[in-house]
Length: 97
Length: 196
Image 1 (cartoon, rainbow over the protein chains, first blue to last red):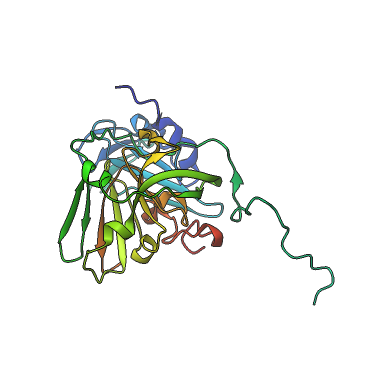
Image 2 (image 1 turned 120 degrees about the vertical axis):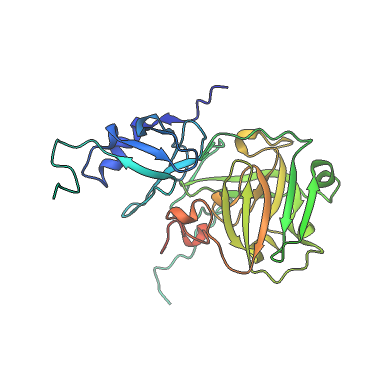
């Protein structure tokens, strides 16, 4: 079945840029439910809703929720175990002793 | 007395809650994929705070006294729709005979959605499990086979694809209520977000 009611995770870039200084378009995330690790751009984002709901493309569980009020925003990443964000080359942490 | 005071304008149409606009169509909002729920496996379960369960199959729900409310609905995304016609079973009927001291309810749906509200708001002829809209079976995109209908609160409280209600001693916030939306959601007091 083809579900046309969602967008792909690339649409999260603009809304999240308001909150984060880093560019999340190249970030990798791990689904806390099924363990799938893949690009956040691959999420299924339901936007015809009171907020943005990004779901794992494998198990459909919620990985990210973003609610935007006129003067506030709420970000829920409970369903994302980690975000791996590409950064410019630097010494790794922890640094060598 | 203020000489310039004209009173409330009189109109045949009721005023809309603050910040709402009127729509004639029926927008489809959804936080996830639409679950497909066959009627032969559909069930509605009320769970009391002590764990006692009260279950209805589809046929059993249809065998209960039916009501046909005509109500105005108000979505937190600012559209309102007036005079919508439904058929369903009153929560007063479903709660009749359920022995409970709970003050709160957590509604849960096929597909995993949840929403919370005070148990009192499910009583007094103000809430239904609705299965028919405008004379026909409730379409899946609008929550069919059956959805909760609690029109005096913002429409996110009227959970689509309703599966059951847990009666709780302590309030437990649901899907949108844990993501910034108001715990109660009275459209006439414009309780959209936490702190409103």
